[in-house]
Image 1 (cartoon, rainbow, N blue to C red):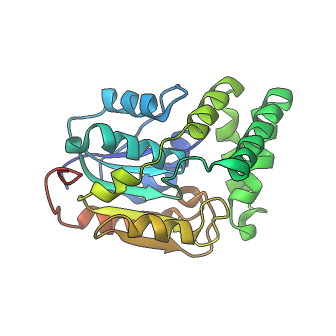
Image 2 (cartoon, rainbow, N blue to C red):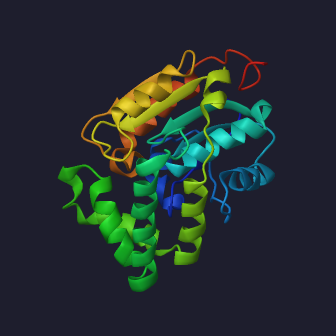
Image 3 (cartoon, rainbow, N blue to C red):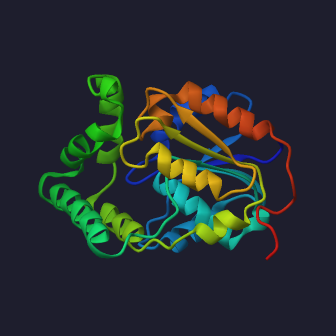
Length: 246
């Protein structure tokens, strides 16, 4: 593979979310992109595109996966291959389910505003990782420190972008580039069934499920994630553009 690999972090995350994987990907040119500060996924995607090289492989974790889909929607000819980790494609559900998601996210925002990002991060991160790792002080401290580097204002804009997210099923249906779909087996936020559905919507995609792993796969199991990414990066290109012509 000659193109660089752009890595997109998730909600309130930064380059630290991907650094354990980058260390495992020796020989691969990795560029960890910060998510531009905006309250719509499309605007965030455009900001990444504006700073990106002409052509690249793309991997997004969690919210970064949703941004990756919006990047492909806008400039499929620039994306050589796509990896979606611990993420989703659907818009916020209508009715009670969607309202419950909104209340949950806004409760986290209220905590961040009242007690600070670190306090919110400690509450939010615990159910995000595999139960066996919650006593791993090095991992948990790294996650909370990363979240604490963000601000409640930035968090609010990212939450608004997620609540207003578009459905990306049309992007998935048109994909023709090598596509990896990966999640932790114990991801309680975006589970295995959701990723099976996602992978089934992409012709020829590869589904990888990482054992003993929760939502924060790049930080929890970087070696296994890197192995899956290497196999995906070695897959032959099926066509030049990332999506089939409609």
